[in-house]
Image 1 (cartoon, rainbow over the protein chains, first blue to last red):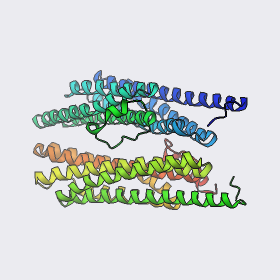
Image 2 (cartoon, rainbow over the protein chains, first blue to last red):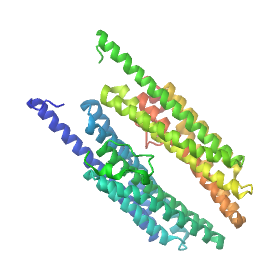
Image 3 (cartoon, helix red, strand yellow):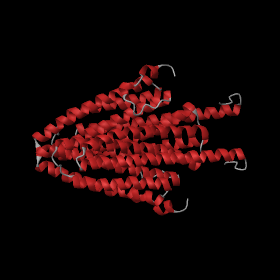
Image 4 (cartoon, each protein chain N blue to C red):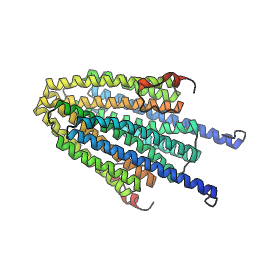
Length: 242
Length: 242
């Protein structure tokens, strides 16, 4: 649609591309920050480091500000540049992605608060093996979904969508063991509940990473796969040339 | 910006207004459906009605489809109409609102699943008084935030934002009582945990209603109050003429 023969239009188009590149960069910075928050929150829990746990909550403010700033950038681009087709999809995907990243940050804060509470209670809680395992899994999902976003990588995005099912079943089985711990030793109820909240938060992080991956598929293919069962996806069609 | 002297532009502008009105109507329909889901899920729990509980999960598919349809409408309006100022804010607010409504629907499904599990377990669980109380509160928040959206009503939106704090403290105190029940009677752990998941889901419904109210404030005032502490809001400035 651009009249690129016109130098003025070329100039505008170059500026616009630069704005879109910056938008992606800012999203990746926010993503990196959120990844670090999840990692720090889990480390705080596993190493009983309440000071690290408290720092995660402070970091969450920075993430919230990033979201407002990026959303504002998106609104300005929509108003001034009136993007169409793939440019419009990029802006919409970024708006959705900041919302998921912000919620991952919230979940990291919840994990950190439980880490602080558990470290103050003092006794080494049950279920940390499960926490470590699931946290590694969902952190990989977050990392992969961000990489997929940066590279417009459909294959990697689809991989994340499938991993979410594995995390859900790991979560269900971990919750079942924790319930058994509780019944065997009712004095552990308070601390086991804290670990349960942590697992729930990690499972939510996985859900949001899954959403991020779905935004990548929307972005690249213009196809909205939210609410489609991963097993029913026609992956060959998705992976084919658009 | 519209050149309303031109009959053609007038025609387009009228069509565009109609599209925006339809968008709002569709959002309200989705909102009504989600409200009903929350109500049915809680009724299923309180009345041990597992068939009603199962129906809520089925209804969730309809809500998911509504979200995809409305988001699609929004994308088309952005691409074709290139809205600016308050029209752009309306479209962006609707995109954010469908996401919150869809998540409220998800929480309703979780409540319904726990209702089915509890009704199969058979024993009247503890904590139902708290569930009834908090559910009435958050359902009012959802209803009010939707009314505020329909009427562009800032006062009502601010009221919802403040109510969320009340719900959070009701939630904390209910969780504390439930933990006591568990410790006093470890045989009740499974059913009390189910009720805890229900309370957590209701608290999340309240959070999403709060988000909906924040979208109304963004829509009417162009001001993004996400991440501002409700106690620090300058309400007089918000309520004054924009």
